[in-house]
Amino acid sequence: MSISPEEVFETVGMTVDHHFDIRTVTLSVNLKDCMDRNIERLCGRIKKRIIEKGALLNKYADRLEHKYGIPITNRRVAVTPVSLLLEPLGRDVKYAVKIAKALDEAANKADIDFIGGFGAMVQKGATAADEALIDSIPQALSQTSRVCSFLNLASTRAGMNMNAIEKFGRILKDLAGKGENAIGCAKIAVFANVPEDNPFMAGAHQGIGEPDFAINIGISGPGVVCNVVQQNADCDLTELAEVIKKTVFKITRAGELIGRELASYMGVDFGIVDISLASTTSAGDSVAGIIEAMGVGRVGQPGSTAALALLIDAAKKGGAMASSLVGGLSGTFIPVSEDAGMIRAAKEGVLTIEKLEALTAVCSVGLDMIAVPGDTSAEVLSAIIADELAIGVVNNKTTGVRIIPVPNSKPGQIVHFGGLLGSAPIMKLAKTQNSAFVRRKGRIPPPIQSLRN
Image (spheres, rainbow, N blue to C red):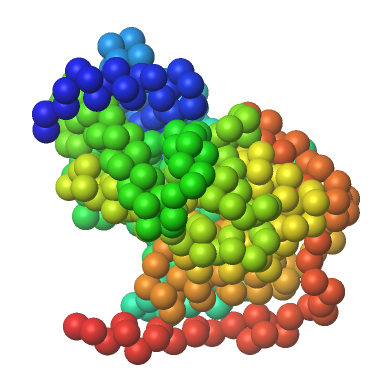
């Protein structure tokens, strides 16, 4: 791949003026060959591998930052789904918690921001090891600081595992009660059709079909895109789509350059560049800001879904032209707590959880970083999750949920998570009784398109 010096200098200008950065370099690491029936030997092998590889990741990421002047905001590791490592150990929660602590200790020693993969694929059913991992989540995430967790609860091929979805509502309530402001709930996401090469937390993990090691890149450019939209206030939507597409082409090229060089330095495979537009709470670095710059008064008002659809389509087309190795989520994040424009719209009551769900019909991410009242029942949490995952299953796309029931909170209050997680208004939920629907459990069958083979 040939990238000219002019392209590099233009991209550096974007970092100075419009918050462009490499949001994350994520090293996926295979741990299957660390498996052992002795928990001490297993944890020792895990720590050794993560510390060695994590130190290299930081070393060469620093070198590339200095070389190109493009910030690399987060350095992360994603490992084999931990439920697989538990298989030889049986159904014992204490083993899962011990592995979580080993991952956390290794990430801390290697100075890795987050380590993902504490999760399981249970879209069709759960093994004893899967059940042990799920049961361990409240302890594991409340007793660690850098470990992130995921569960794949549904897929277009398998349908929806309502047994696991119903159970997860109760797990989430338990986790919310451990730690200030239910912070543990911000470190776990549940999915339909989870991608195996996603570099973003909390869903990152090392996929079964992946090599031993691979570098996956997540870029961030809402500020860059918002700037060009504002500069083209008079063009029609067809022309605007072209402007966005060309802009995402440029930032994707920069992401692939960093990813390929980092992989080469480390002697590992380059995986993918995820072209998701990942917002922050910084002024001007907002996906909501892009939608509003298109002419929608406030995100959540009529026109928001159409504007978001245009944005995502243009971003995907621009990214696909820039790289043959696009993967991950590759959509647009709309996390309420991490986007200043989303926070503002939610505080004003313009953006509701129902409208957010509608936006996810055209978005590749889902209900992300949604804070809800602490008295929300486990059944209602499960029902919200089921609704969102159904969108992914029926439309053959990825959807996920990070919902946070903050204890002792009421609608309209603000909860502060700190760092990249930002702050979120507690969102009002429609008045409802506990959902008997989720108590039926079982499986929701896959749609007919699952029979395409």
